[in-house]
Image (cartoon, rainbow over the protein chains, first blue to last red):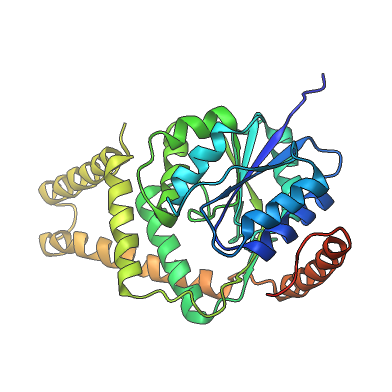
Length: 238
Length: 89
C-alpha cells in the first residue's frame, strides 16, 4: 500500500540571503522524487533575504517554495508555530538556514521514518557516522559535559538533545510544541524531552554538523547558567 | 509519572537499603555510615569518565567542510545561471 507522504520543510531565517538560496538548491537536488514544500519564515531580514526567496519562487514555483514572513525577530518557537500554520504536508522537517545542517541527510530521515514508523526522527551529531567540524577542544568539552549531565538527570532516550535538525509527524509536532515554553536551544531540548515523556516513538539518524559561525560560539558563564536553569526546569516539569 | 518523582523514588529505595544495612549490621557500622559518600564519589567519577571518554571519541568530520565548499560552489553556479542573486557575501 503506497502511503503518499508530503514533507513540509520549515526554515526560519534572519539575514540569510545567500544561505537560503544555497539551501533551497541543495534540497531540490537531494529530494528528487519526493513530495515536499519549503516554508521560509523570515523575521523581517534587512539584508534582502525575502527578495532572494521571491527569486527562488520564480525558479522553483510558489507551490514548492513558500515565503511566510513576520515583521521582526519573534523567536524560534513561534517561527515553527507560524510555519506549521501554513504546512500542507503530513510530516514537518525543521532545520537551520545557515548550512550547518546539510540537506543531503533529509533522505535518511525520511527513510528511517518509513522503515520504523517513528513519530519523530532526530539528527544526532554524537554517534558514529555523525560528527562535528569547527569546534575547538573547549567547545567539545562543554558539549560533552552538558550532554553527560543531561543524560544523567533526564534520561531522555536520545543522544543529541540540543540538535535542531528533526523530522516530525505533523500532528506530533503540533501536540508537543503547544506545551513548550523555553527559548533558544533549551527549547529544542524541551521539545524532545516532552515528546519522549509522552511516549512518542523517536528514532535517531547520524548527521554531520559543520559549524558556520566561526569563533563566535563563545560559551561564557551566562550561557552555562542558562543551560543549568533549563535543565533544572526540565527536570522538575517533565 | 513525572520524571523527578522517578528519581525521588529511586533515591528512596537506595536510602531504604542503606538504612536496612545499618540495622542488619552485616558490615561494620563505621563503613556503612560512609556508604553514601562512596556512592556520590563513584557517581562523580563515573560522570567524569564518561566526559573524558566521550571527548576522546568525539566524532569529527573535517571532510564535510570540504564537501560543503564544493556544494556551495555548485549551487552558486547553477543559481547565478538561473537568475537568482547570489553575489556580494
